[in-house]
Length: 225
Image 1 (spheres, helix red, strand yellow):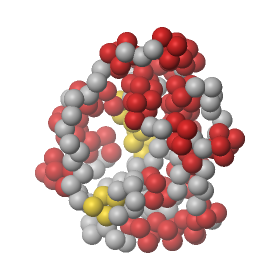
Image 2 (spheres, helix red, strand yellow):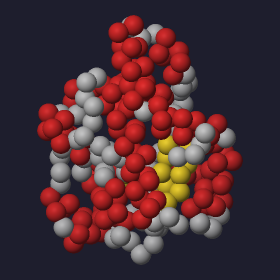
Image 3 (tube, rainbow, N blue to C red):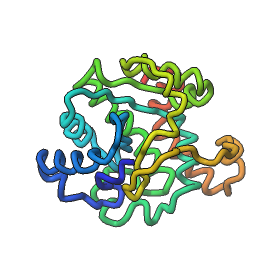
Image 4 (tube, rainbow, N blue to C red):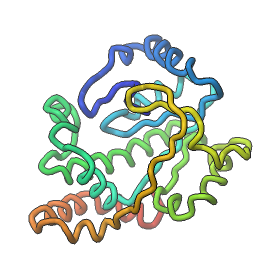
């Protein structure tokens, strides 16, 4: 989880980000507990990790690949609106520091989604051969085939263990090593149904926020980000 290395969203900047050596010691202490090769570390951009953060972190390792996952912005806005407490997700310090549009939750989440694309492009400029993009909606629609294709995307050797990804060790949000990443199965609500159920004022906020990212949404639509 990204939270074991601090969280810009709440503006809790950990001391170990002050130097590369301190960050290296933190990473070594965390990953030393993993009993097998590291598959990856999740980062959330840009309200948790910046492009410079990711650059600094990846440079700690001898080899790395960056997989940027992009989802339909409409689904992102609805998901974050439904599952997060906006007032605590972005505290007052974060609102002063992050260059987001904080007029409404939808505008803040749209700003985050747009800037995540810009982070991807910045990293791709730095590491054109190491940064890959994965479209979440296509991945989810063809999950088993997409999982089987991940080694090709990341330049890794295929393995029969890949289908058992959920059994691999991972860290929870408290930084404790766990196994079995499988979440309970549940139906995914279509974003169009969720929008129809919103009060008219809130729905107008959603539509206005989407207009602010329309150019990038069209790039997402054509899979040309």
